[in-house]
Structures are given as structure tokens and as C-alpha cells.
Picture (cartoon, rainbow, N blue to C red):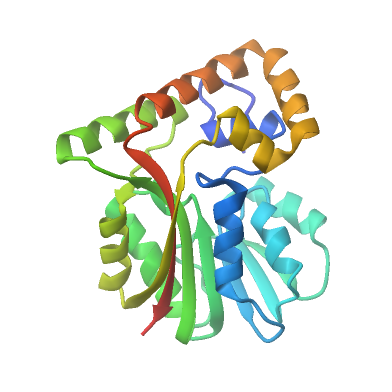
Length: 256
């Protein structure tokens, strides 16, 4: 989680360093829909892929599942979240979402946000296969990702290139149809889907996600850090350039 060099750091870590807590493309609104759709109960064993700053983890843990495990490939993330959520039944482990070493057919709910987008399509499939493997039959897998709409292959490639250059992550968003097909191909049945605008860096969404006071603090931090400000403005420029063709999607799927 090295954010010292703002010219090279991944966009979401720059935003986190400026104080932003909600880093999902559909904002807090879409995350809440995902968590509510998971219908987590006290008997559920839950896995989160790439919990990041732990915003959604806090929502899920507050529902008191039987167990919660967050799997992240970043040592700093695991260390920070272990300290933040030190309680019975909650565990964070260092690992990759495509190979968790968690027992097969053992989990009731698995979810991940804003992480499949960051992988090539073959790696997306590997992660979805892993979710399928560790879920019990009838278990639920939920995703919250960056989506595309009204694009041909040429425009899709342009958007992917612009995003990669801007956020320093090889982002590969898909259309709703492509996301659905990817999940279905790996043995899931789609139960529901939710769409939201992708307005991560727009003022209205910032206030909705962070609250007015925290938004002011984030804005001040950005103003006082010229290198971070430059990167964030570049990201917002790309988001606005393609705003007619990018959105956020959450999908709830059941293991067949």
C-alpha cells in the first residue's frame, strides 16, 4: 500500500490517503444494496475478497455473522484491519482471491467490490471459480464493479486504456451482459442486479458517501497536496469524459 509517490500510486490509494473511506464505483448507496441483498444472519459464514479500507467489512461485521474472513493480498491492509476489527469470529488473512486455501463448500456468502474490474478477463474467471469452490450449494456470491454501457469494442478499448493511464491500474470493466455471462459461465444463477451512476469524484456523491464535514476535510487535504490534486483531477477528467458509457453494477448470484 505504497502511496508515497503520487505519480505512480494507484488512484484508490491516493484517495484513501486524502481521507476518502468509500472507494466503490457505485458509492455507499450501491454497497448498502449489496449488503442488504446478502441477507446476512447469525448462522452465516462470510468471506470478503479484497476488503481494502474496511468500509463494507464494518457493515457486514455489524450484522454479526457466525464468522467473517477478509482475504487481501496487501500486508498493510491485513495488518490495519486486524487492529481495527479485533473481535471474536472476525479474521483477516493474507492471500489472493483466486487461491484462498479456504475449505471447499464451506461458506454461505462471498462478496467482493471493485476488484474483479482490476483484473484481465481470465483472472476474473479464476476469482469467480474460487468463490464458487468455497461456497456451499445455494450459497450467495455478490459483486460490485465498474460497468460499461452503449459501447462497441473500439470504444471499450479506449475507455479501458484511459482508465488504466489515469488510475494506474489495468482496469477492465465489462457491460452488464458480460458480467452476467461471466458469472453464469462459472456455475452461478443471477438473482438480482442493481445499477448506479459512477460519480465517485463528483461533489454530490462525495457528500452522500462521506458526509459534509469529512468532504470538507478531504477537499482541504487535496488542496494542500499538489501532486495528489493533480492525479485526482486527472482521474475526474477521465471519468467525466466517459460518463455516458461507464456506470457501477452490483450483482447477486447463487451457486447452482
